[in-house]
Length: 259
Image (cartoon, helix red, strand yellow):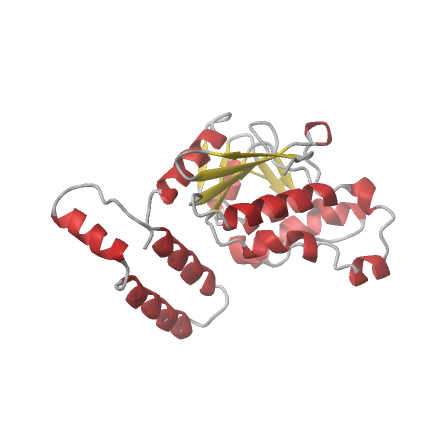
């Protein structure tokens, strides 16, 4: 498929890369761009050669938010009846491969929400995160009041969403919005390296781990522990578990077959 608003790459090491590509608009998230991201994610999800995905805007900006020009004339009925935001973001919410957001520069509004939909977010020292929707008379609609609260806590989420103020990379790390901060200009390479490491693991095990961690957000501790235990038992039936343990005992690198 040919894309207009994103660049899609596949590396030989099992890493897929999606780069938002509206530089003149600071990667504003228009509907066609989100549709293309959705399509690319679905393709990677169904591609057995891909073990992890990097989502980035490049080394200058991640995404400065929704396309306000597109939203300016959007009314309640059209948004509600056409499930605006929901249908465009569905693939991001349901992706099965581990996805790393590599953030440089602004990740505001929908950009911040998009980064939180990924499994791991890393950023460089130029990164700025925020939910500034209140400044234009609206509110977050793709997770900004929900995932942000789970990530940084109620008080910080209230501050960010009610004032529209941005936080920098170090504050984002302090409040656990990002996993790692790297030097400016290196975040995409860092994300690719991390994705390659994940892609080298047993993919059934990687998927079980991702599902188990995500379940922790949706269940009680005891229900989560029971689910985790059953997933652990499942790994015992895998050829990769036998290979991994034998490789450890034999002091060699494991050669996983994803079975």
